[in-house]
Image (cartoon, rainbow, N blue to C red; front, side, top):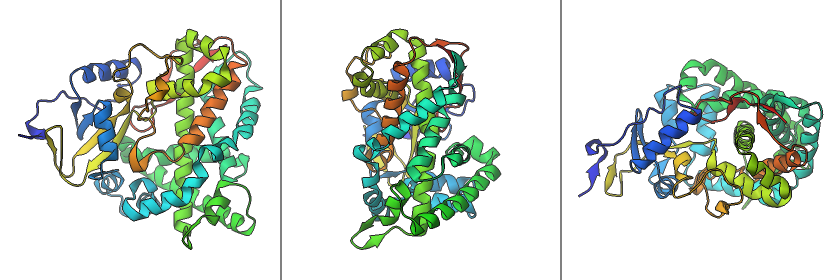
Length: 398
């Protein structure tokens, strides 16, 4: 006989605890995973194993809760409401499928590989002034993906800092505490980005180039093209999905290698050959999307548990990725053959995954040729686990 969620005696987890980060967070999640596959959160429940995570990310009976968040926080008009209404993450059915088909060719591995020379150039440019110690978040991890996204879009690299700032603010729509406290700044960032992107789209219509925006303008399926509203919001999705995420994942990678010098030695033995596996191990071990939210839109039963309509389900990639894996961070263990949930799964699998992997690979290859050993100059400053889980600072010496 299926049980309802209310009837279950589940362990509890305070996802909103601002102090839950770093080693404390890892220990709490490991202890939680030992107690079962499901836990109770203040606003819903959390799945902890890989199979349950895959199920809820792929199920057609659940959806990304973006519009539920908009309703909960009374986002009913203005730039942020417009963005949330047209965000590809919030779309389902034919509208979502059509957009994915139109933009998919711009995000293939081959498309990402075209930008590898630019990645190497930016890495060299950012590395040149550094001399033995620095906050790598500020000097390398943050500016690198912003420069790359500007290049991919076909925007001036002089705009990279503005793009990074907009991305940081707009990304906070997925962080409930920030949405409550910083709504005005988020709205302003969306409005400013819309104005900037509108001007860039107009320039690219007049003078097409070999960049993402020109490719999206020309994208066509069965005689149907993207509308201006769709174009602007897809470009916004690329920005938000491609700056803070890669910044945070690269910072987590460098932290891991500083804490595991034997793994850096292994990478330096064959940087180009081992970089892809190293990236997959970083994604598995330290996902910058530790939780992915879904909302149940049709009552469903899974493992004899009834999930009512409206239930918020947080899929914990941070525990699912480690389930059944023995040992610590290890880039030569061959674990890349098991797909992690860091980029999601199902119809909302991350569009920019191939670009992110390429950026991370090129960064590791570049640094492995120049750094013999990383050492922590101070404890890593972990950001909040809500939203994108990166580092606010990473002071290293080499």
